[in-house]
Length: 363
Image (cartoon, rainbow, N blue to C red):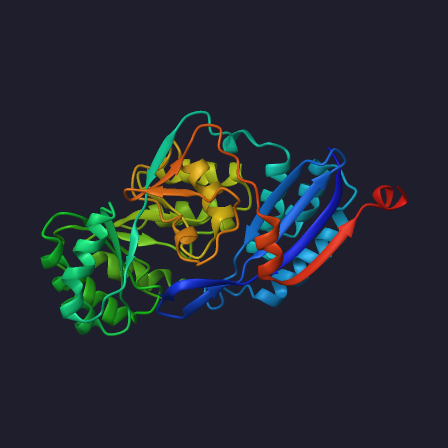
């Protein structure tokens, strides 16, 4: 199977409401969308949303990576094309994943074959900051079917503790909480916050301190009343193995865009469990393409609420038959295979480059 064309796009997808993280507030997502086609008209799609501030990878660098490699691989056999992109994998993880997964979809990777109906529970972000709004939001999410709430912390340890306590009281044992500092705490604040937590109903505390400061995160884990999950530092099997040696690190957060391929992600998820930890999967800033792929890999592997919920955030959906959501879960009907709505794609496009094989041009 050869690549007859590679088309790169950046699209702008306004969000229903701002998505607030400790390091950035998103009003819109701007993913790179990769489309690859073969000589027989088969199509594969990939997505790469680079979150400024999440890592050293930049949107400009990711776009340059995609353009450089699209020009190199067009006309190649798919296996050779993947080998070319993989050689430069460390230069731009998210951009490389967008190309590699597009090719995997073109090749009809078996992990994307939905043979039976499936439902994958999702968590939901929890947005209320004022105490008077907390109870109403808890009831809203419970009515929507969500049983896991994600609470962002990391700005003020004392205020965060008060808010978490208020949410715990409003939930009253009816749902689980995940706390996420997005690397924002200093070691001292992270230790103080984690040691003061009431563990009732709290599943985990995610990424207290800077992703490069393994010692600080380990020291928070020593005193934490709840298990710790590492997120941003987990980019390779070696990182999973390093996390497994730290007491009270009981979860690893994985994202497809950090592991390059569907098989790579599945192997990483299985390695987490082999080492006695529990994997959590999903990227809340990804859109339908990557959420769908993560959900496909999650089947039969993930035993907790998925974080591949980014597709619920934009006002606009890219699939002609959008991903289904019902009663707190992503629904995958048997035989589901997404088709991108090209009209919507064109309307949201802010950049586009197309590369065509020499044979196709000659025809």
